[in-house]
Image (cartoon, rainbow, N blue to C red; front, side):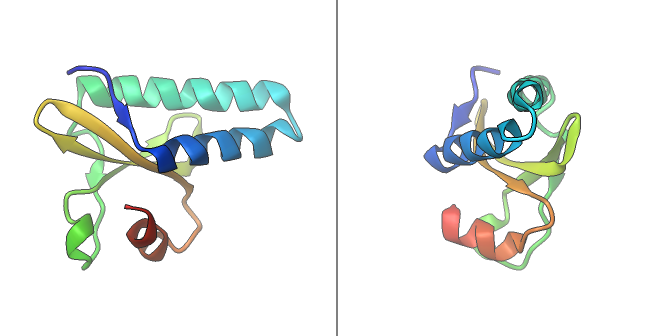
Length: 105
């Protein structure tokens, strides 16, 4: 696999989450960003690792989801296209996922 491709939305979400975490723990914010990097590295090696995101929304049918290692309440949504891993979104798992994903992908 090559390098991952991050959507603008995923980059915005990672920054916002890290900024939120930093308010209470700068060290944890750095660990969060490192955890994203490690999770993505694992997905590059094993792109089928994440589960298919089950939804009846056709435009989301190829979306996969994986927990962010060490920050399991955050979900990383991605697609595998050819030999590329496209990181689409990074969101808190307790949110209204189908609606959030539909509006941002």
